[in-house]
Image (cartoon, rainbow, N blue to C red; front, side, top):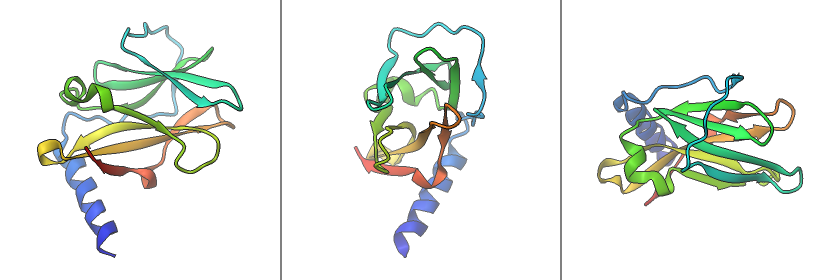
Amino acid sequence: MKIPLTLSIVVTLLTSCNLAKRDVVPQSPLSAAITIPSDAKPLLISAKYQIRATVYVVDDVVMVQRQGADAQRLTGINPALYPDFQKVFFRVQDKNRDGLNEIAVLAGTSFGATELCYDVFHYSLKQGIFERRWEDFYCTSH
């Protein structure tokens, strides 16, 4: 019972101490053309459904764009984290084993960066967008 309590305390502290992080409504795709930066990361969301996407950072916002679709805002970030943690900023895995990879975005770090904490976004086949699931937030040793 102590682990969920500890995790909720860590999440609360990370969220409250990270003033630079802005939450962005993920439900709104952008119709305006956005230039995808050269350091964008191509991702395979589903081999079965042939869903590919590209995830990237513009200023202090994480964006994702599916092939042939408009860009979508995922979340705001602390821009100070991105340069130092660029290689581990995004993670892709199918933790819930539904056949669709989730995108995990670095949300914060513990003191000394011994743990990295991630917000998780699931792809909705029905809506064609990525949605945050707060219950899937997790931290991992670096």
